[in-house]
Amino acid sequence: MIKVNKNNLPENWVLTTIGEIGIVVSGGTPSTRQPNFWGGDIAWITPADLSNYKNKYIQRGQRNITKIGLENSSAKLLPKGSVLFSSRAPIGYTVIAKNEITTNQGFKNLILTNSGYSDYIYYYLQSSKQLAESFASGTTFLELSATKFSQIPFPVPPLAEQYRIVEKIEELLSELDKAQESLLNAQKQIEIYKQVVLKDAFEGKYTKEYISSAENVETSPQKQSSNNYFRIPSTWHYKKFGEITINYDNLRKPISEVKRKEIQGKYPYYGATEIIDYLDNYIFEGEYLLIGEDGANLLSKSKPLAFIVNGKFWVNNHAHIVKTIDEVDLSYLTYYFNSIKIDEFVSGSAQPKLTKTNLNKIQIPFCNLREQKKIVQEIEYRFTLIENLETSINENLKRIELFRQVILQKAFSGNLVAQVETDEHASELLKRIKEEIEEYLIQQKEIAKSKPQKLVFMESNKTVKELLEEVTEPIEAKKIWEKSIHKYDIEKFYEELKQLSERIEVSFEGITSKLLLKK
Image 1 (tube, one colour):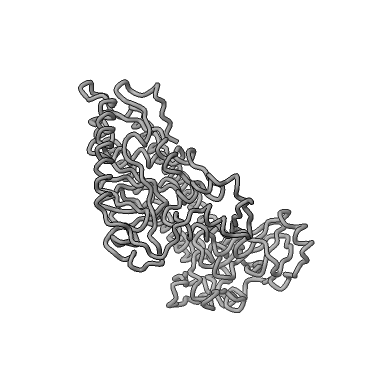
Image 2 (tube, helix red, strand yellow; image 1 turned 120 degrees about the vertical axis):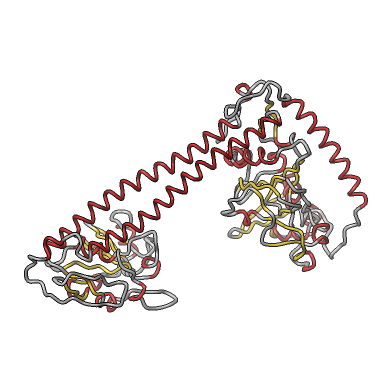
């Protein structure tokens, strides 16, 4: 969290609040029951539009509204350069309007005057997510009201220094971005290298010294078209999975609810989703190879297809349970399974599955046990080096994020760039902003007078209190909102609810809240 202490700020800085550096306005949503409110040429932004959005500026979202929709809702047309800040679900998305734009009620927006610098404000708010959340309230989800947003502390340097700070921030962050990109590319290369290691392993490149002296191994080189087969040495051959393993799927038994609760948490549990369910379950003990059976496991990139389990465990019928015959090393088989593409052996579209029949048909490159163990040793040696490299990369990625925070902390405490004595004091800047805000508000009042009267689209003009006085049974809060005068301004709806809080009884049906006015 960015921490700002006025006692530690440079002498020519001032600590104020967001509400003192611009005009805070909320957004709104035109009625979705009125088709002519939608599909116009006015950009309308929701927090969902900013999910995974990386740019500093935004031009439009997924939907546009019309002029008539704007005029008949609480949405506000924000000028170019306004700073948009999501105030719920989630709090903290920050962008700058590249053109005139509107938002829904999930934003608290800051309209700047001529003396405001949007880029400086953008970087401050972008780094102040936790600070903003500390000003929010709510039980179902946190929400930041316009009043609370206005109260967020804001360090104001001289305007010239703001420009220098932003320039330095972008210079340093650009360098960190390049370093991060290099590390992320290295991560991708590591994944490729893992596959190269496995390919080399199962083509006999790690055991050439054994091949010439291999004993009792058939010489049957095979030419296979599938990507799942390797170009194996002439001393190797392929064997079907079912020929070299013992399957224990049929040992699974249904267990009672009482038994399930007794062993839940006592032993490791394995299933497609690793969530306890009532499917076939049984406790196994020993060393087994588990192979994912259904699509959730087979097609997941976050899990291996096959893995070895030791000790006691229990499993549902979403995984095959096998052991190998004496001539096969279990780790060798595991590495092979995690090196191939399993899709061609899977059947079913809605719920892809690797059936026992298809599993047993899979061809395994087979060499003698001595070579298998040597291959496992070579794979694990290389994978250990890879894991060390991955650890180093992850640590450096964490350092980069830490450096970002350090840069921003220094930026907003006056320690990133040097102060210049000839810069105008920040207090003078704030005076000018205050005058510009007053002038802007006067202009907006004059503009409002000349605007055409809002059209009425058969909507209620009753307050929450008036609507609640008409009912004798609890009514859904959502229905009251939709019928009330505050239909297009959720904040005013909540504000009136707060005023009536001592007179309202709240009940729940599931997650639906219902309201009734106390008589």
